[in-house]
Amino acid sequence: ALNEYLEKAHQQLEQCKQEKEEGKKYLEELQTKLDVTTAQVTLFEEDFQAERNSRAEAVGKMDDVRKEYETKIEEMRKEYTGIKDKFENIEELLLLKQQQFHEHLETIDQQHKD
Image (tube, rainbow, N blue to C red):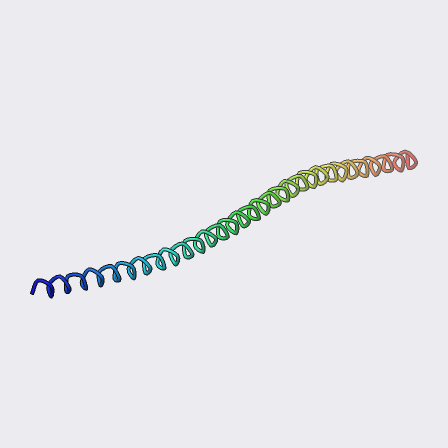
């Protein structure tokens, strides 16, 4: 009976050792899968961050270009307003000169009649 008991205990011990080895192999496989998945996630995060940085840089450049064009447009508006004001002043001067010229002609005409 003791021998039977020892034999069963020995078999159970061997079975436990075998299960332990199988469990150890399974854990190693899981660890390998986890490492691979972690590496893939890390690469994805790096790619995603690089894409995000690239887009942020592009948006920054577009914003700079937009500001540059807004500045140029504002300068052109100021230049246009300045030219328009000068033109209006010249136009007023021409009208005044034309009026003075007509008055002068009328004076000469009046002098010839007298």
